[in-house]
Length: 501
Image (cartoon, rainbow, N blue to C red):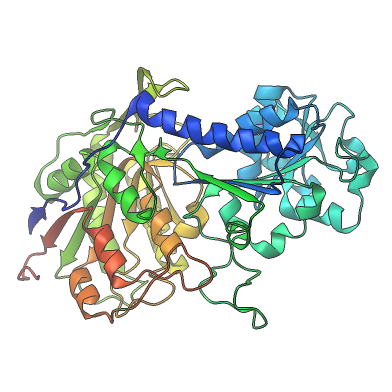
């Protein structure tokens, strides 16, 4: 077994870090807040405000600031906050409750979901399952679009009385993870307030992949697309981008820039050296691979000489080799070390999370695009956990779609094109690959069967509009190649096989 590495072609180049990088987000947030205040005052006719972000830009922090600022305005008495799923609403409710106090913040949730609310959220908010349980002190109501929309459909929100605008029950509707909420869900809550503020990652996957337009009557309209795409170019929409990311290592920034290539600029709060992985003693290919991952640079390992897979998305031989790479790392134990920052991006101290005592976020998450591949990966996780007696939270497996919005120290992902024979709409979707590559705070390892370059070289040239709407969101070969150029790449040759190109 031999391994050979090729360094990434993409380089960090000119980038700001720490407070200088965070200042860009502060300025963008201030512009969005100013637009919000102008709309509430009636000095601007905005009815949509969009704060667009790359993955890990600190958008939830910005949303909390905007909610608090809106409520200080004389023309804002009550706001609603919504998102597609409770897993997005719950942490946001906790943050707003901590900021504003439980009497002001009401989490409106189905009775069947009460047991899912974390204890720290319960202690920070008021919880209601019925409208008449919402206290008169409430200024913020949070709930999923399904929960808030069901009340709107039956015109029940007017039991609360009109808000400061005199017509609607809320003065502002805030939508978190806005680019994951499809248009047909947004229209169920749109009339709750005269002004909507959407905050989110433009690279998220909507709940239904919008690569094809099922709406035959209007080629510019698609109810399954993320709702902000229907309004971004409207004259009453104010849109601004957050130009810095907090989540990735500095060495991952070229990868982030490859996904958001049409942005004017993208900086990284973490500077070189701010994140590191302390590894155990390793040898052989495992040492080579994990030392590469520990640099913080995205790493791709293509494996040559594998037995045939059952299918492109059912690849037990590939998972077997991944298990051999993971076992010595997990057996020896490792730590994820992070520089922590204040709200302005200035370094304060260090945080160390050891695999012997993992924290809230998993240390390692294995991601795949298909359910069968994740089922096989979950069995591998169970074997490793049992064999090595690992504590809960060290390693888990998930589909990419289910893991969006989540964070982990190390991502180990099966490349969506591994074993594929063409660039189809599913395995080359922009959002799916973007989510795969942007969950990790410390290291990204992508694994694949040998042959990605050949697949892309042989693929037919085609235009791509990964961010434009309407149109396909599939990535053309040129975009895939640009993304792969940001990876440190290795070829792992199994015994008895000549290293392929």
